Length: 143
Image 1 (tube, helix red, strand yellow):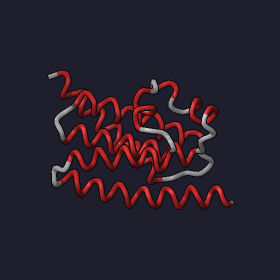
Image 2 (tube, rainbow, N blue to C red):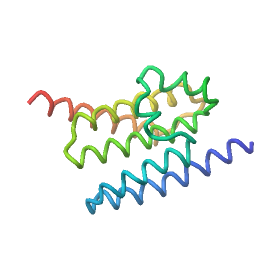
Image 3 (cartoon, rainbow, N blue to C red):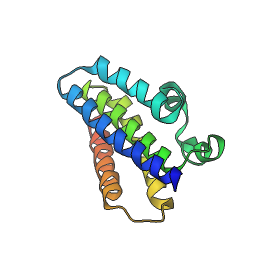
């Protein structure tokens, strides 16, 4: 019970944190957002961003659950941080980098949805949003 409460609190805090980062993104404060993302990886997942950024997509789920004893809640946090990182790159006009992080966010979130014992419309909506963003970016690459 304690673990679940902790994860719920962590997800709630992350939501507030991401909302704050998005407001800085809208203002074009990209360096500040990047610093916030770096800090969030360490604060929430106890690893620096480079560790996760360098992990191949195929090691993002089972590897983290086994090797680091992460929970599905941790993976949700990771997906949200990848999504925020992707948005930062997108707003900077770095579409290739953005696509990589949207794809990582999607893989992690789809894994959580598939493995979760409860249905979440919010997560399903997030998956659909990520799929749309990825599709749009792939279309841009073709042009």
